[in-house]
Image 1: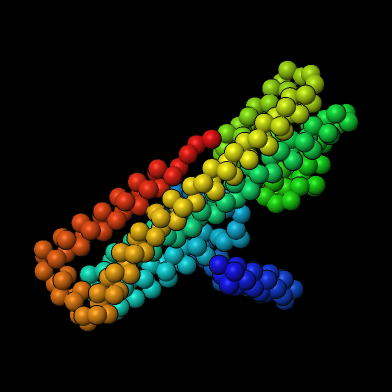
Image 2: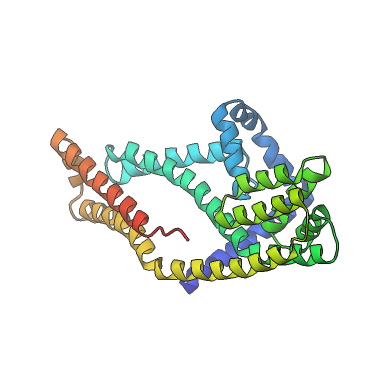
Length: 292
């Protein structure tokens, strides 16, 4: 685990250096221009617009065209690799799995960003309470919080402040934030701010109490995540064991997978076993999901 952590840290440092150098030399713009045509074509379709929204929620710099090209390349590579290593029958299955993995990556990035934003909500409520107590308006308090907080809270609040600066109401700007990062904690915070902007009055005491509540919820979520980590790892270990058994079987008896999938009964048995692995993965993930 230490080696994986060090390797990921090195890759992150290298990516940051490459991005900085590319920004200085204009390589980033050239890379964007290379996918500009594909990006325009993808955005014409409804699914491309939805994909753009999902990419925006993840906080990545990927465009819909870049993600589409990467997903197509991943699906093609998985098909070819599975057909060459295992058997031609496993090519389409690996392609479907690769496509699911690509979109699961987006969901994972969105969930990670959402969790980071939720972890920053107590600090956000504290900054807003201090600014409101000092006599600042809510718009000014949001702009101040956008400058003081790190990403992703700072980036999201900057969008809220920019929306209010061009004439959007507090309710509309915060509603867009709630749609981008849905969570119960954010719903409570947005409701408190919207009600205070409508009815007037002091919102300092409400934000103070909300800060304490958000801190307690953050600790509770952290404890639950720690206790359910073994179940989560088990959900991913079960399919890996199944794939490893296929590779081991083909290694011990070369050509056995091709012979097994050469008949109709063999294909049916393989599909049933894969379906059972999928059901097991879904059930384990569902049992480990606890709403707080």
